[in-house]
Image (cartoon, rainbow, N blue to C red; front, side, top):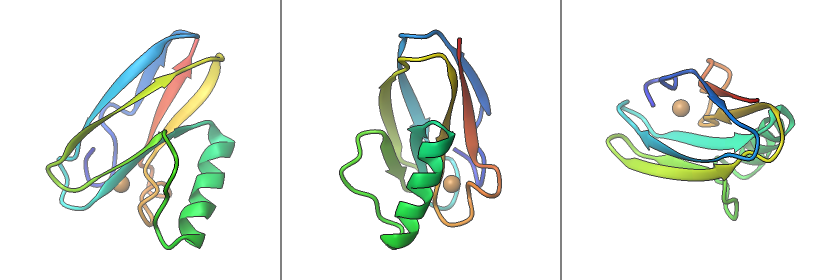
Length: 103
Ligand SMILES: [Cu+2]
């Protein structure tokens, strides 16, 4: 995670594959990683707004402060487009998204 992008910005996975994503926040502000399809990203964005930037009780989300390291494990059940988005205010809109192509 950088301010404000993921590196890399795309990754290919196989349908049915379980991936452990390792994140390191090398930026100077907090960043988030939320795994979901495009619709889920929109739902999560409005959830974040209504909850004042907090999201609890979701397994597929991680927030890292500058310098922190963390991981998320996710199984990609279906082929298609999935995204890992950062929904700290303005980041997703600025293009802070990792596109996951499930083949
Ligand atoms: Cu961010």
